[in-house]
Image (cartoon, rainbow, N blue to C red; front, side, top):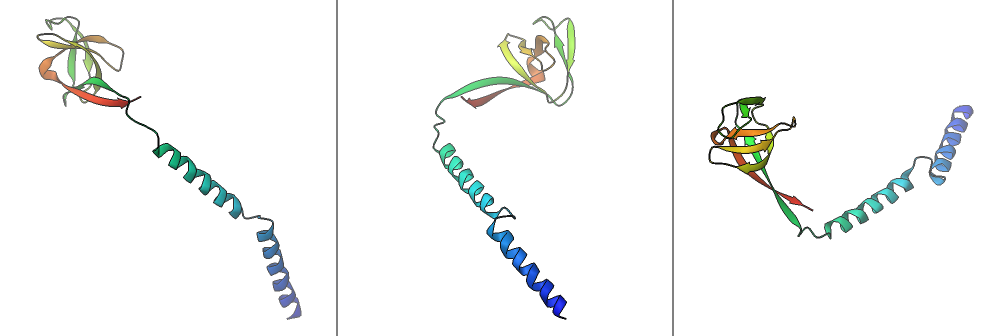
Length: 121
């Protein structure tokens, strides 16, 4: 019985010493929380007044054909449905776009929709 009580007292002393020398890292956690809070406050004070607009073309649900000319006669590539492509210009019949695969060509007006997105600079 004396051995069990002695082991228990020894374990408690070891735990107290560990807390005193910060073996469990609790002081570091508090310091990290404070520095995170300070950086968050700093970020919320930034000004977001500078914005630019980017125009994209959203391709319809199904795959569509990209053409080499604005009269839509010579197919160039197939564009995946739902893809967002970079808008370059608009003609009477088509949008001139650049796809994610790097193709530049013309898409029929009814095959895509213009989407304008605000970008903070």
